[in-house]
Amino acid sequence: MIHIDICKTLHGSIGEMELMVDLNIQEGDFIALAGQSGSGKTTLLRIIAGLEEAKGILRVENEVWMDAKKSLPPQKRKIGFVFQDYALFPNMTILENLLFVQKDKALADHLLEITGLSELKNRFPFTLSGGQKQRVSLCRAMMNRPKILLMDEPLSALDPQMRTKLQQEILSLHKEFGTTTIMVSHDPSEIYRLANRVVVLDQGRIIQDGTPKNVLLKTSGSQKFSFEGELLDIIKVDVIMIAIVSIGQQLVEVVLSQEEAANLTIGQKVTLSTKAFAPILKESH
Image (cartoon, rainbow, N blue to C red; front, side, top):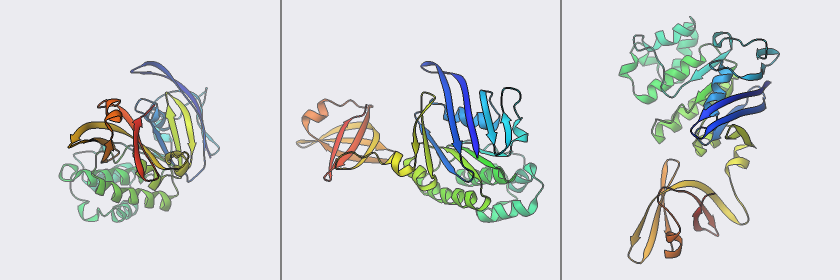
């Protein structure tokens, strides 16, 4: 059991904000942290890792990692951290990057084998693709057999095909090592595929906490689906209006009436839903 009850004042784009999180996480859970940028997701990861200070208590199993009297340094916390920018040592080979964390060649070889990197172990990071670098970063994070694996949008810079491949590898490592994983993600499909629980933050507070199905499938009445996106353009084709909407990694076309188009503005957040298989586009509040 991981018990988190912390408070920290953040200075964001809209001024001061209190990050206040009271959360219990079961061992072996895969938690996705979701919410708007600036809601406190990355700061929460950094507090768990010991990279930022906060008030409150952080207890992992029966060990206190942080309270009013002490705060364990990051190197004494049994964590692995996967960043967006890979953070690999450029002057070390792939194998050396892993062994720098822990001199356990058998484990390093096993991780490289799982992630399909064995043949690349003697190469340097600058010779690798983005997906390969992220796999090395993931392997390195697992070298300490961490109790908690923290990931801050680790796959955001990768193409959809590579994201899907690495998602499966992340899930395999999570299950094999029995790690409790906490991942920041904005990708609904990624969250649904990986997590067993979703915690949504807004302005530093938890506003939703539940299964991916309950949190992500926003339905009401006879609606079949509902997704939030950004209105990129409205174009006129003959006598009809077509909205171009960005939803996650995809662009969607929706036919509008003249009246609907007149009430929409390029760049605004919108909700795309369907009722009886007829898409409805409206302003997102």
